[in-house]
Amino acid sequence: MTLKPVRVGICGLGTVGGGTFNVLTRNADDIARRAGRPIVIEQVAYRTPNPECDVTGIKTTQDVFEVASNPDIDVVVELIGGYDVARDLVLTAIENGKHVVTANKALIAVHGNEIFQAAHEKGVIVAFEAAVAGGIPVIKSLREGLGANRIEWLAGIINGTGNYILTHMRDEGRAFEDVLAEAQALGYAEADPTFDVEGIDAAHKLTILASIAYGVPLQFEKAYTEGISRVTAEDVEQADNLGYIIKHLGISKRTEAGLELRVHPTLIPKERLLANVHGVKNAIAVMGDAVGPTLYYGAGAGAEPTASAVVADVLDVARDITTDHHYRVPYLAFSGIGENADQPPILAMEEISTAYYLRLLAVDRPGVLARVATILSEEGISIEALIQKEATEGELVPIILLTHRTREKHMNEAIRKIESMADIAGSVTRIRVESLDENE
Image (tube, rainbow, N blue to C red; front, side, top):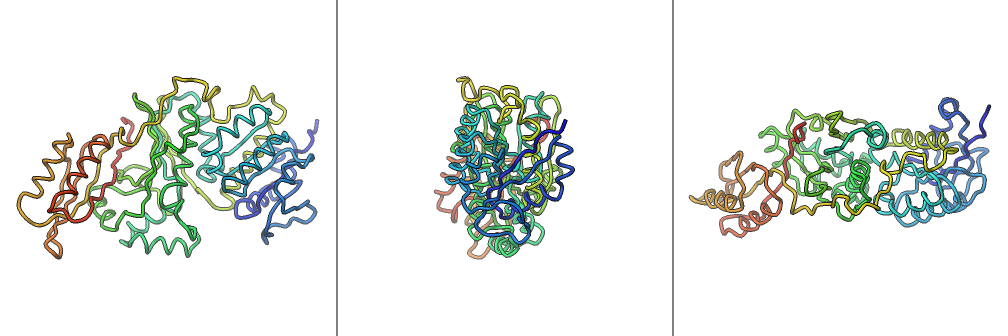
């Protein structure tokens, strides 16, 4: 028996939309065999034509809401990005009984709870594999492949722009601003790179991963977010001397007190797999209690890598479209998210414990280092390693410290006291250190 085609409307024909259009048309026969029925592009909405896409014979419009209300469309693919219009488009599609596929991590991280509730009430699917790490199927892996596991922690390089910058700072000894300008010229960074370099994009993605990993509501507003714009070439060099590589990580951990949800520059040992992910690539390490450590690596962005995930979602929708929604895999892996009052809280950053890298400039005179060590000791912070370099111009001595694990609030207080010392020039540079091994 031949099932009727699943008809798709694509909203947005930019980089990802164009890639999705081309993958769906180029691989139509293979996709139909996998889905058990043809998948047909019924309509495309776009403002600017994409010269890479031949839309001859396909309905086109400039109004995305026309796609959301088209009675001939089964699945709306939202690839316009942003928050507000995308939210209205998706909710309109759901209200009209359409299934939705999106690559919009900001939309899911900020409005996902509302969207999933609306979809549940209408009995439709919302699929979002491409929202995190482009073509890497990490959401499906977390939601289904690791379904037997209690997830202990996950950590990921989930923004290619930041990883490109840190890679070239380390390999070539260049300054952040210099490599950022190069990334913009090559198209790896936007003209306004804030979302990428200040960690907002990574925090969107981490929010989604943590919700799936631990079965809690999406809580983007509680994610601690710190960027890489203050990381210097000297920090990168000193980390290397100490046996570490600086990566911009999204980290989430399960603890007895609650869940950690944080994005920040991180020193990780050179031998770790994540330390050896370079350029614009993404990678996510996941620790499950049964499977142990796993790693998901690949292209985190780009037209066809992201389209690979979008089309895979469309294919999944085509397979499940006749299944009663009560029997489908839950959007965020767990049933009843938000209904359980005992779900673990997201911890404030001040309550989280890590080790630390500190770099400070001190006046070259006796007793300064002893006073710094005393302040750390008063806050219960012990020193693991110390490097004191030769004095710079103006008789300032660079001092680099590695500490053992301590709570963020104790480190914050220690840094406040150190910065108030008359012999300390400027602010103390602080970067967190994680080992990310099987024993964590």
